[in-house]
Image 1 (cartoon, one colour):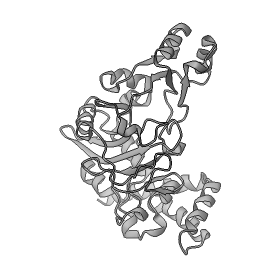
Image 2 (cartoon, one colour; image 1 turned 120 degrees about the vertical axis):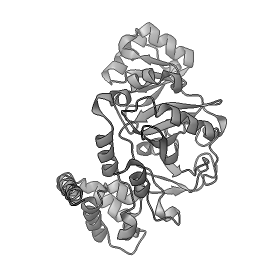
Image 3 (spheres, rainbow, N blue to C red; image 1 turned 180 degrees about the vertical axis):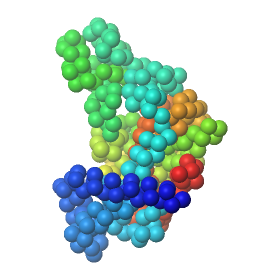
Length: 341
């Protein structure tokens, strides 16, 4: 036990010095000023607390804002998962030789072809004529970098806007947007949330070798962009065990929405369609690569079944925002119970 505590302290000290040498001062100032406007605390004290929390609780600055650390006491803060903690778990339990199945989107769609529910094409091995035929067949497509995260390099392209198909292929190769995908057709209830994007679920799971445990259930939705990623103006809220949205959604700026600003749909109480089938799907795909037991699955709901968008072996962290709920307890105890660290 003493050795484990010593290792934990050493890890926190190492993270503190790494964080101190890589401070995003502009982000620190922006977040501390914004949080100061919602409380009596001066921005300078919040900034100092953000730096302290980075060392004591391994929080990123966005973690601090997302889970209202400025409003929480120590006994509450120690219950929250953070992105650095999640990264530690991923590095420990997800075996490196098998990560390419998830880290490379082109490999993922091949390995999980039965469950992705869409046509795909690799621009690297396709002719301009094949790309033209594929895009015209679907009318519009999503183009993606194969190794990016946070929605980087994802764009929607329309056949009607492309005149030079050889030039289009060259453009994709230059931008390393090698993967071309059919736009996933959505269940009408999911599409209604935000018509411009595929609105998805993030289900974080852990496979212990016999049972698939669900660690987090999340509803993500866009807010005018073509993707629902947090970094692109999207927002999220947590789901209960039946797939019902529990609270208002919030975005990367910390702004909360009970009513979706574009669709006008009330978010708390929204029932995800086909949710039983979602859980069945996750239970199936989580067993396919048992060497990667800790995964954040992005799931879309098509009209007749849920499908997998991608699996993230180094998943982000999603928890309820305390200021939007009466809940001041994070998911760290559940992670510890299930994973056993």
